[in-house]
Length: 292
Image 1 (cartoon, rainbow, N blue to C red):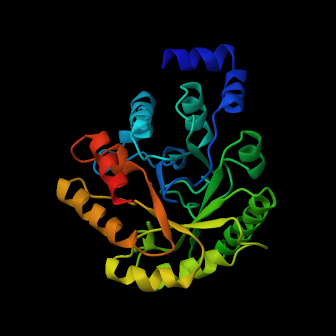
Image 2 (image 1 turned 90 degrees about the horizontal axis):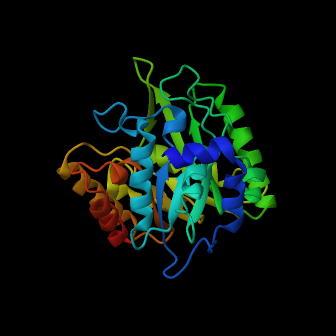
């Protein structure tokens, strides 16, 4: 940690230099599957894991967990915001890995403007300039919120800009609504996930470089029907997992079934692997890799 602070203070150019010499790889290799570890939650103020409200707030601890996860066989890369990716570049942890920049982090968790997911993270030109491999954006649509139209339009333009650069963009769509207490909830019913996939697939002037990042539905048996909605390649997102070993095992089983579907090409999982119930990051990551 002190060395990172020293470099940032005395030699900020070291980040661009590390990006320039990073050893790159194709997005897909070998079996054509992807195992990506996600760590873009802190930039939305989403620091909690289960009952630990600030589990992700210790940056040195988070970086240690990420480096451990990235070192495990079968882990293809990482999804994160600029601050975290810059740290990982300085640590030399991104050679031979897929690097995905998180593009819109403006919808802060719990804020009244949470659905206003403005593009406050990586821009397409940043991803291209740094030699990163893909981008990811979050698309939450509330049929009762007129502002969702702005989110749709800005998402479509981001898809266009990424396609113009021939860079893959992973779109994470949800149908969302606020509950009686005003908290934003994502609808994981089969009908809602189907609708979100249909909307996301049609955004922009070209879908050639668009991937989907989708949740497993409330009833995993519905996933086969849901994934028939689009021919776009998709990865599964991990989502919230309860704090017990049984919850973790249940999540693995849900992922295992959905990974057999023809358009599903991998996993993008964050907190449930970086902060598993038993604390064993390596074992959690290895189990997830084994599902592929």
